[in-house]
Image 1 (tube, rainbow, N blue to C red):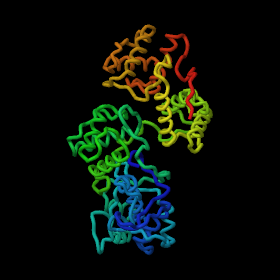
Image 2: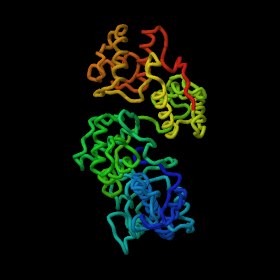
Image 3: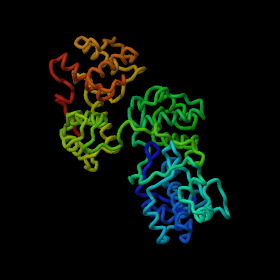
Image 4: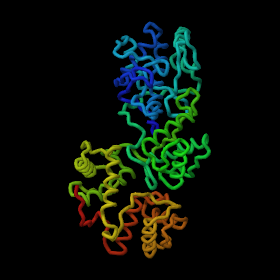
Length: 464
């Protein structure tokens, strides 16, 4: 969950023993877990304000374990253990105290964080009698509550004045932060921005790992170099490709160097996780991420008869929903009509399959290469865009012509920016799917007199 804003998971998986023991796991809903721990850790006869302060601490501790993927990033198949040696006390199958159960129902989706940070604070605590620690003293909360302190004042007493309580955080199905498919040179997605931020922070502690100049969500050669050095430093296969093993190791080291699972955490700030796109696209949305998925579906629909084509409008309406459902039906996914992570990954894979299957000389206007183009890139796809922009320059002289060198230099970037300004696209100087498609459309209209983009008149079908 490290790549996004925290939410309350529907369920939590508890290992009934120490991390490396062969004890079983049990999965239960998150509120029931908090009720169990609270009924095991504290006494129902304590003042209500003490109970509330402890429930905040118990909830937030568990959320920190889930948010940091503390165990899962190290290869375990659970979120937390049942032992106070490592985590907090959980007794499988126990009954809950009635008043504690009522309080948890009210508070389980509230949590503590530092002001300016987004992650749940590592709310360390101990009983305050047989054991003491730097965090909350459970018996100490009783004394403070009897003095008339509120739950928040009690938490401030132990964790500092710079904390705040997030109220009514949304409940959602927990997903691993690993994006579900390998990331490599040319990939462009929100997960890569997070990856770049992680690697840049890790490089402060491990300076052999080179800094990535711009964390823009595009897997460029600088990102590849940083990944390779990371893999070398931490004993992984040096491929430059981020598979699940590499991703898990990066998130684990990032959590460690920032001490996110410690009381003195550096904190994760919003700019470190601000999304470039929505995680799930659904009916009623209107944004660039919808446009990108519509482009992919338009192409896929042209080459797969059973997938309904869709126009690229940026609005997720009924036609887009039907197209998504048809894609999900063809590729064996639940027919929700929403583009979640699994659907998005299969859309990327299906599109890549088309690129690899359609003969390169079959279409007169090239398909988007499924690789974002930016300054510093050298490829045949850059050469094609340069050729298209040069022709467009004859009609739109404000868009500079460029030599067809295949190298994306400053002049190509400026030409792309001017094109984007001319046609109402955010002027980033980066050629993604939507910019490529618009350049291809204008080029086709000027060269052939009508739209000859490959998804308009494909005449080519992929089966299987």
